Every structure is written in C-alpha cells, then in structure tokens.
Amino acid sequence: MSTPPSTNGALVDIRGTYGALLIGAITSASWNYDTAAWFYHITFPKDRRSLKLLVAFVWSLEFLRACLATHAVYYYTVLEWGNVKALENIVWSVASTLLTTHCVEVVVHFWFAYRVWIMSKRNKFVVSLICFFTFCNFVLGFSTWLTSLLSSSFSSIRLDTTATLAKTALSCAIATDWTIAISLIYYLNEHRTGFTGTNMLINRLIFYAINIGLLTSVTDIVVLVLNTVHFKARNLYYLAMFQVVGNLYANSFLASLNSRASIRDKKAHDVHMSTFAAASYSPRDIDAGATHRSQTVVVGSVTGKSTSDIAKFAEDL
Image (cartoon, rainbow, N blue to C red; front, side, top):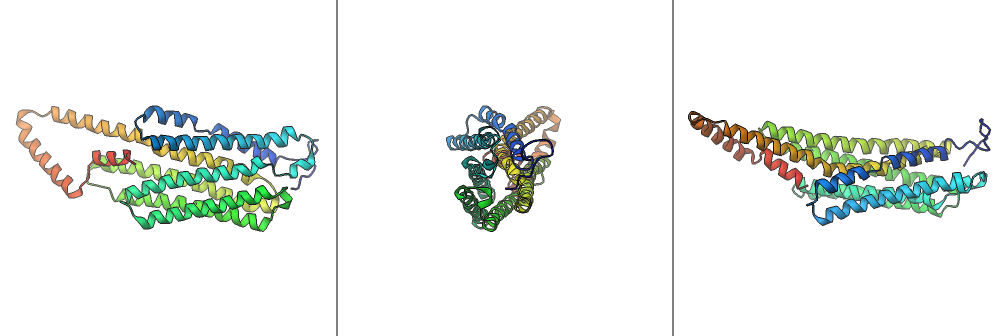
C-alpha cells in the first residue's frame, strides 16, 4: 500500500487509509443498536423464543464486528506505532470484519425473505430469488474474506480476483435489497381495502419497506463505488464505509420488529375510536347505525380485510 510522506511532519500520511478506517470503526460503534435491542426486549416480551435468540445472535455478530474493527485500528496505530512496514500487513481482524458483516447481511436478508414468504402467501419463485441472491452474496463475501485473510500484505492481494469478488458480492446484496423492497411494496398493495384506516396502515408499512431497502442499498452502492476507486488509488475509504453496512442491516432488522409497536398503537386507537362511536349512538340512531354496520359488513366481506386484520397480520410477521 502506498504511503507517501505526510505534509504535517508525520513519517507517513495515513489519513486516507487507517485514518479512514478509524473513522469508520468509531462511526459503526456509535451506531450500535443496543438501544433498539433494549427497546425490543421490553416492548415484546411475549415474542417467540426463536425470534429473541435471532435478535441476540445479530447483536452478538455486531458486537464482535465492532471489537474486530477496534482491534485492527489499535494494531496499526498503537501496537505498531512508527513501524511503516506494518502498514502493509493485513491483520486478521481487518479481514474478519468482512466476514462478520456478510454474516449479518445473510441473517437479515433471510429474515426479510421469511416476511415476504408470509406476505406473498408462500410465493416460492420470489422467495427463491431472494434466497439465491442472498446465498451468492454470502459465498462471494466469504471468498473475499478468505482471499484477504490468506494474503500477507495489501500489496500481495490479487487485485483482479479480490476486486471482482467484492464487487459481485455487493451487487448481489443490492439486488437482494431491491427484490425484498419491491416484493414487500407489491404484496402490501395487494392488501389495500376500501377502509381509510387500513390504507393508512398499509402506507405506513410501505414507508418502512422503502426506507429500509433504500438506506441499505444506497450504502452498498457507495461502498461499491469506493471499492472501485480503492483498487486504483490504494486507499481504505471503501472499508471504512463497509464498517457501517453491518450496523445498517442490523438496525433495519430491529426496526422491522420494533415498528410493530406503532402498528399496535394504531390498532388500539382505532378500537378506542370505534368504541367511542358505538357509545355515542342514541336509540333513534339504532336503525341508521344498523344500516351503516350492515354496509360495513358487506364491504368487509367483499375485500376480506379490515384494519384490525391487517394490523394482526403485520404484528404476526
């Protein structure tokens, strides 16, 4: 790795390499999703045990990745301080952050594949496509990690092979994000009814799906662009940005779970308002109320859905 003399008196200029990595590690640590995980556990204590274990597993992966990134920066800036030759070495913790991030991606993508499976009423083609992209992303990411781990220094990495593996893995991740987002939007629209409350709830779920898919995919695109520049400019900006990717996927996973709290509050509000409306009927309104309720039953029987049904469906995801 090229390390030209610094203009500020330091032995070498590492602002674009380990300086960038340090910023990425600190940023990813500050975005740790401990608070979101805590909110999940106190809000949904009755969730099935398998889901709680999955949340704990993702948290463990994120904690491990943050520790690995911290160790990598500590190695270059503390343990090997002043050792210019050490800047060329690929310490094992740097390479391992790639693997842990890809593991988080895989877990989160399979989770959303499960949600699409439920929402699409078990559409095998769409879910198989998502699983295919997810599997390719993990295999290519694992190969990238292995190639980096087996290389003793940055200059000894086979640039063509590693660059191709990394770019293809990122492309698969982007394709997975968009497939999941488009699938969720499509199947949520399929659940629209003539009820305003139901459509508002659907719009909220679509908003969550768009934001989750957009944020992760845009970040992957940025990493892909920086990865392309890296192999020409020999910097680590792409790796610094990649430190944040795992956090975004982990937080999108918890956001999808914690969003059920607002859905539950919306359903409770609707029940409260309907109870208030029913209590406000006077005897002379009974006939009109009966007519209104019969019309509602007809509409509900035609659509087969109601706000309460959609809320229950969303909470079961």
